[in-house]
Amino acid sequence: MKRIIFVLTFALTSLLVSAQTALKKVYDERVNPMEQIDNALAQARASNGKKYVMCQVGGNWCPWCLRFADFISKDSDIAKVVADNFIYIHVNYDPRKSGGEQQAKAAAALMARLGNPQRFGFPVFVLLGADGQVLHIQDSSFLEEGKGYNKAKVLRFFNAWTPAAVAPASSLTSAKNHSLQ
Image 1 (cartoon, one colour):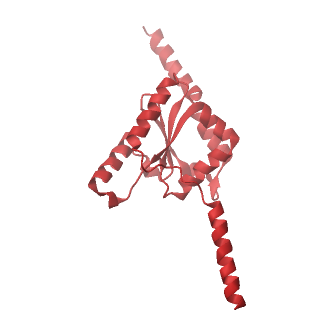
Image 2: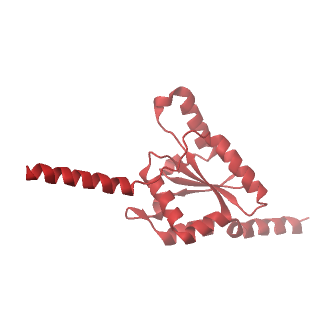
Image 3: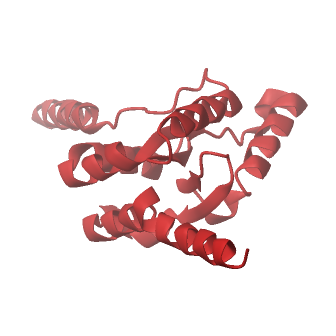
């Protein structure tokens, strides 16, 4: 009898701990991802070059996707860089075939629009300019450490792709083109 009580207590404790550490689902599966991207691009255009669109592509089915979302929301340094420089969206990608041919075509069109980032696994980060052009695709495995993410690497990634960091290259191109006229 003591053994049954011990097993039940252990199981209940494990269940409670698991429920407390469950990560928040951040992907809205009801949202059309193409419309979500279009809305984010409109916000980026309204920022007058001060923000890019950062798409975290994945889904609630992906534990690493949820870990990353949790990680960046809890770190104030990272959250500030993201808020100041990006329209950050969680783009739901549903790779399941159960949705039929129409869902498969929509998923393929989404991946094509984003430069086919699924080749890197999930989550994958796709940086878009305000015009919708893919500026960068980031394999998240380079940001991982243990069962989480490395703060220095994540900050380096975000800081390297802010509009201010990318702008000098486009400014040089503009100056060079202007001097040729």
